Length: 314
Image (cartoon, rainbow, N blue to C red; front, side, top):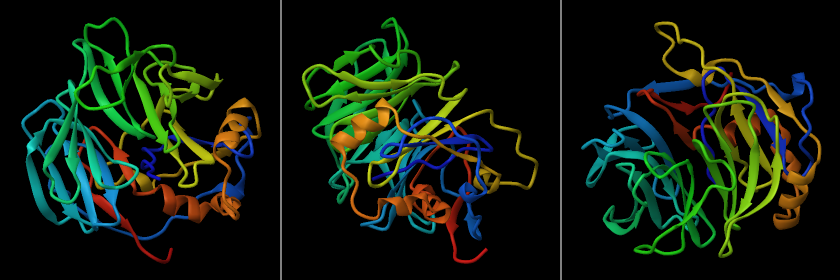
């Protein structure tokens, strides 16, 4: 399961999907352990999103949303391998659950499927006029895009069942500027950024009509991102304001973050019903393991940051 990188200096709420979701105070046991890192400048001009492909030893870098800048492929050290000129103007990039296909939100009007082995486009999922799609997630046998209003009337989600078909336009959950993350069983975790307080939804998109399974209100302020743990039992919600970065401090992930744990409510019960965690899932509560699982699988941003690889030691 993918995870996004945690953003600058923001407060990260850990929503335990099998152990609960009521806010608790910070604990010293929840403090992440900082590890040494090595930085290198990424070969992009306008960084937007990053996806890790461990199978092929690659990073996929989206850049230049709405521009002519191509999708970039590097090795795990950030060394350029390819520029995919057939896919430009990307705002988001993600691997399918079977790791065979890249899904790229591009030019704010479509999602392109790309063969992950050959880097050749294989299908297109077109957005309706006025729905500016900027993020994409695979969810079971569906493709889900998050869009903002550029003429359609509101923001929301687009759910495609197949390429070349019209998506379901869903505004019953987040309907301003949605942030989304997905679980392979066809569930989407979603909430709006751009206003506060945050409401977090779990939405089942596996059927003909999307269904809200649960909703948590007042889940912090100023939503930045979600990340779902690899076993699908925990959501990390990054909220807060991003402070200015002093000159010379080039990478945001070294800034201090506080993790808050939360006990059970309907959100966790629904996900626990759909996703029974494997034995040993409590190991995710160890701070260093969480850091390794959540960083640096996926990161979104508006500016080019150097790639940081985790290294052993303090």
